[in-house]
Length: 132
Picture 1 (tube, rainbow, N blue to C red):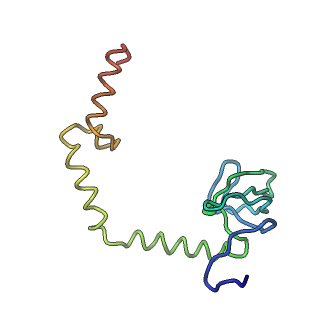
Picture 2 (picture 1 turned 90 degrees about the vertical axis):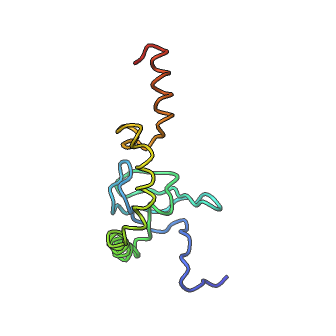
Picture 3 (picture 1 turned 60 degrees about the horizontal axis):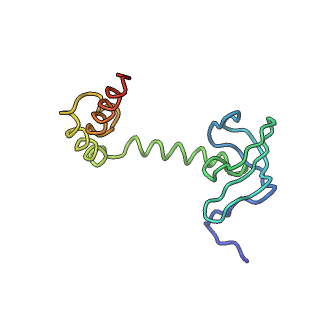
């Protein structure tokens, strides 16, 4: 089957990859090799990293081909810059509506984003069990 232009091909066994974020025991930028590919709709990989760590169930978003790592960092920086410069009115509208309702319930509801009735239910349960 011919490769399609512009479509990212899934990783294969033996591909050299780089960690795109800090994973437990694996700093960002660590090089590794794909040893096994799992999954049909959600691809996961067994990767043996050069620092001696072997990790299973590594997601597509956590690794990138070694040759594409520099362009990945540029795209990630551009996406972060775009997110900072995005119009905040559309992002603040849902947040403002969410903050108005729990404001009457108290500061703990706003900080945790847990509905006030659930906080009250938990507080009552702790009092019943003598944990409050």
